Image (cartoon, rainbow, N blue to C red; front, side, top):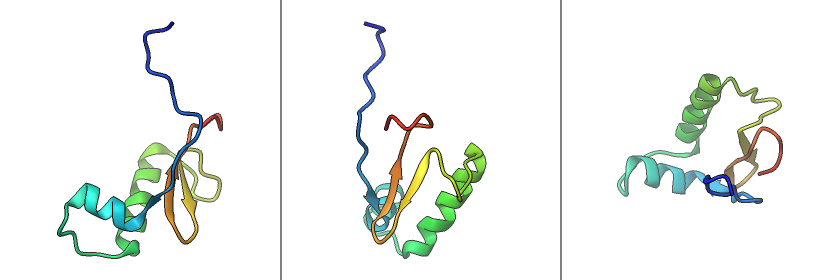
Length: 73
């Protein structure tokens, strides 16, 4: 045992609405374009290529899913 928590083998897609509410609160006003902008900024900071993402994957019609760069999550 390494003392680190184990990483889940699957990830769950999170909707745009859930992201808005979890980050900006229950009364957040906005739409999916607000979350797209913020995700684009996060990808830029991470150095993640939107055309071939390693960390944040777009799930069309749903939202986003976090993944591991090695594809294990």
